[in-house]
Length: 362
Image (tube, rainbow, N blue to C red):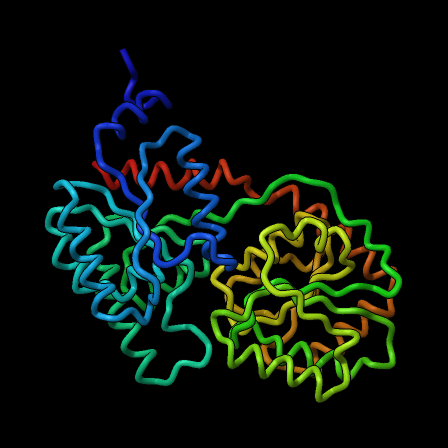
């Protein structure tokens, strides 16, 4: 006989339910959110969870009516009492569908960060996204977030009861640390070229340090905001830094880039978690970032320097400090290696989410 609390017992009970993971657009997209979704799905399946992946249409959160109609049709096709985990990029604007189908389906929302907090939105767009996401979250049986900061925001600004929210931190893999012996030192930034990641602030700060020896590699695709990406390249050209700041495009495998780096730097305006920062720690890299969103949760003072968001002067000063003080770099490198040992594995993340889905089926 299987004991309900045992691992086999849990899987046996969950196998009697229909469980789905709905993700918009291309699952192979090179962003932290999609990387989280890909790895989570794979780990859940490896644990033996009978979860089925469903690709929602592209274009979310600014999906056309046809995309919402397709989502509605799919939801209608699901058996009653199915558990449906939906990525927040879509769920935040599926409020009408969530309310309609919540009478017979069990929704579980996966919120990487509230969409209303995206950089560059006007007040009307912020209000619209705030209203739709709050309405959708209100009918979710469970809500998964990727940081304690996001949990706090959802309770304070979106009226989601704390007992319905579970933090499932992104996992990291175990591997060797970067030697950090570059001559000149190599700065690495990993993020899609979008306004929220503040590459423009980084470029402006580096322009103040042309008298120092360094190279910078910016890894990230421009498909999410081609206009902004073009502006960044023009900014580099105007400053005459095209030989020192390299745009590498999006990449699936970043191991070589992390291992070749000496410092990780990314002054984002906001991060719901910041998987790239955790990855940098897992390679033992010192970090320079902005004190924004969940970044202080991820990057301890022993491993990095956090500055005021958007402050070019402070960022330039921090960069100069780490580039000219080898002892500081070594201390932060040691701190990063120690912090890496505290990061969760992807299996732990998947086990946390599996338990949430278990509660949603009850």
